[in-house]
Amino acid sequence: MAAGLLVGVAGAAALGQYGGSGGGDYGPPAQAGNKAAGQLRTAIEHAKNSAASQAAAAAVTHLGHALNCIEGTKGKNFNGSWGHVCQGQGDGILTDIKGERNAASVMIVLEAADELAAAGVKSGNLAAVQNAARGVAALLQIVMDGLR
Image 1 (spheres, rainbow, N blue to C red):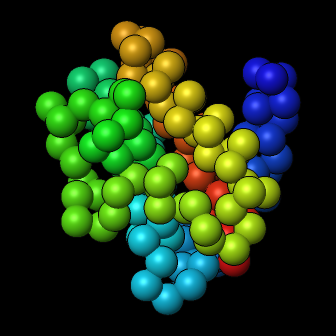
Image 2 (image 1 turned 180 degrees about the vertical axis):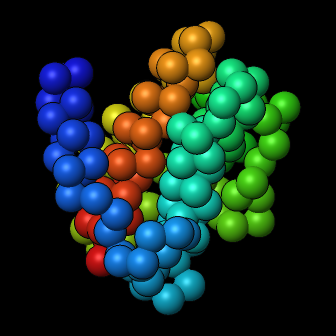
């Protein structure tokens, strides 16, 4: 599974930024008013912030933000001490993606992002957190693109 995950992340990284203009442009949401899409954009942004952080505490906090967005407040790894940047956007991507067009085809990728984020925040090593965050951002972008 790990080898397949790495191949998928490497493939996503090789394709570069989706949606064009760099910055925070992640393309349009899958559907207007889609709760999952809004949370995906926020989680991707915070995973990228984590990857760019130069201090372990900041990297963990931003990756924790992404993890909290993925799982929502009822998730097994939700940690309110990191803050909940997706509060008010929905009930967590894992919950809100259900019923979306193509959700079944991206669920395995979303679950891999969840597992990678959880492992990253527990790693205790800045480089490991940053690498996990890069992977989480790439996997979540695949999910976002798959919902279109």
